Length: 314
Image (cartoon, rainbow, N blue to C red; front, side, top):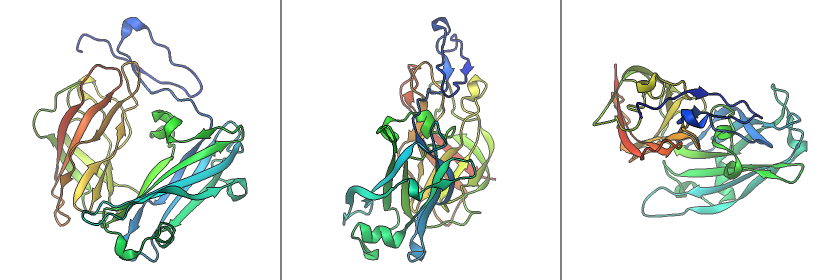
């Protein structure tokens, strides 16, 4: 890998990126083909609070991106299911359409696009999926997937939209989980931490993120999600990438899928969750994140590489 020339190419929406085959591998942002998609404007609340069932709700605002400021969208469809993650008494519910919105429900957002604020109360979700308060526990979740219907009859969803659209660059908001949580205070598991690695983390292009002090930040709309931002692949000089996000799910901490937006020709280099690691709600001195880097290697010819990040509070 050391003898190969790497460069960063920015793909502008609506154009095709070209590369000289003699300069491979080329790190490039994933290409995007867009007809219409829902863009996240604001996530007000992205979880359900079991301590306040009566008032708890998922609340988010999206607007629609197409060639005419969202005016070409004829339907916004929300489909959902309940996933029971509690051992011993599985009351999971199959996916079904929860709600369909049409242009009469839309209004112009601050961006000038047609959009909508969606609210899904926990009490309403329980009733819709025929569940009671006794059926649900911390760590369970309602999993939602959405789709946008274009006036030409084409339907766009996570299954036929590129990783670029779904990533941080365009904020495409097709899928999300309404997790039932054990809420954390903003000051817990946040602030200055020292980042290092447990074991050998040198596979591929080397360590994913530079060692040293990093600031961990709470994420708006959730009491349990945290993130940090560091350049990826410091051994190559480092590339500016999206925030790296992880979530404290009552007893374990899990890494959310991370897309570098970079590749050596095709696809995109990704990081996904390895074995979830346990944590102590009452002790935020150490966080262990088990990851698998190069789950998608972006055409770089690198095997999926398990690595472990250790964060020690300073």
